[in-house]
Image (cartoon, helix red, strand yellow):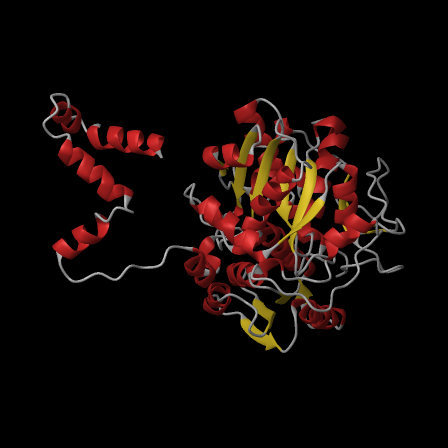
Amino acid sequence: MADLQLTDDVPPVADDGVWLACIECGETFAPFDAIRYTCDDCDGLLEVRYDDLPTFDEFEGSGVWRYNAALPFEEGVTLPEGDTPLHEMPRLKDDIGVDALRVKHEGMNPTGSFKDRGMTVGVRVAQEVGVDRLACASTGNTSAALAAYGARGGMETLVLLPAGKVAAGKIAQASLHRARILEVDGNFDQCLDIVQDLAQRGEAYLLNSLNPFRLEGQKTIGLEIMEEFYADHGEYPDRIVLPVGNAGNTAALYKCFRELVKAGAITEEQVPKLTGVQAEGAAPMVEAIENGYEDTRRWEDVETRATAIRIGNPVNAPKALPGIRETGGTAVAVSDEEITEAQRDIAGEGVGVEPASAASVAGLRKLRREGEVDSDESVVCLTTGHLLKDPEAAAEAGNEPEPVANSTEAVLDLIEEPSSITGTVRRQVSKAADAPLVPALVASGLGVAYLYRKLRSKK
């Protein structure tokens, strides 16, 4: 069973207060003397550890590297990344029925996903250990981020993708940033098996989330959420709901909170409940939580339109499962239809996300409906990728274009049909034109807005 307790003991192998620790057997390693992804002794997952953990007072600047006091370096290979918006969702909050709802939109990073946070650290480590070829398996976003940051660092990049299973927008990014793209006749987990084999043979430096340094960059999501939410609300969120694929973000956020508690920046009671959401067709983490398994069981066949979380063997489960359990969180599976509905709901607030991102809101809605989330909770939903990552899915979820003849009259006829709110407002303005107050209101720019609100209230 994973031991994630942070210790005060600094091992002799520490380099400037940084070392690697195995979460299974406790063995420690120097961080940069050799390339390693798992424990030399037991093959367990590794975590980056520090002898001096900062509080919020020690952070300055913006973006990921604002938090360099909690990272292995002063600065990484940067574009820059981080400092993503924490959107308010007033209508969605009322519809779902929680006390506060914010959406942390990681799609606003340079390549359009949260993966950039991990790559700014991971590619910097690759430079430190002296490699020149980077590699990853990917459902799309990792390949885009690795290709961009590899290009920034002047390194060769190799990405393995499951053939026919990656959104075109993501392949286009990797291609433009000059990655070498190999489409494997298999799923993501099989691609990762191959990349791990290549890494073990010394053919490339692995930058999937099995690499512990990747998660160091991703933990800054949690630091930003805690700072921004507290600044706006005077308290920390009760719960963070996030999509789960390889479970890297869940593991990273839990590490973030453990470090904040250890540093004395927050209390254990202030740690948000980590709540994971998966698609029904790819839900090994949910299965493990519901059945009390110590680890996940690999799903060989996975399918969901939420391609970014179409993963059947989450490698970070040993770190992520304790995070969900120890914070009092849970995990839930949602259907593709529920994901699409949530994608539309988020878009209705003006925020565009890819399907996997919308899983967080779909999961919150389902948990609230089932009574697992209380009405007095304050919640942050993490959305991990921009809607243009998967433009085809966005088009399918959105409104259909309406054909119209080539004339202004034809357009007016169409928009003035009874089903059109805009047409109704226009007709109401026309009917009320003789009312004594209307000309003044329209002149001041308020007339249409006033009538629109009145019509909406009647609906």
